[in-house]
Length: 171
Image 1 (tube, rainbow, N blue to C red):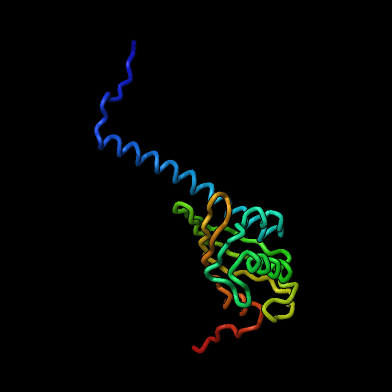
Image 2 (cartoon, rainbow, N blue to C red):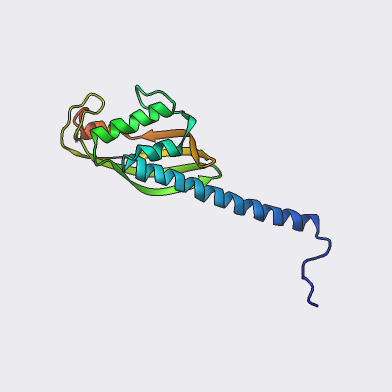
């Protein structure tokens, strides 16, 4: 009979190494699942306007640590923001440049695109095509987005809409 080549009494260091490998594998699986949830939000909710998916992906106790002006930091505030963006920019969508996951936190760098067809932050529709970058972090637990931190280049967006003067060349 062929016996396993594993030692009968594995050393503590071998057990720790094996345990670390198992933990790393679990973390990789969790991270990939979390990235998929965030990507689905970006593509199907923000880009596709599918608010049934929004309800599926966002936890009822969702907390936005960086809510946009005039929005509450809860699930309802996020839903309102997404609807405002979809109304102002009906073709609103994002190009995801990269995502990194650290356990249940997913950082995404993306560029949003759209055509200004509805009022946005007090600016009447201009018909202009816009784009602006964001970096955000979303925490995903049990397949639901539970927290958000983010920075969006709204200054650039407002310049593109003509609400803020473009940089002047003073040379």
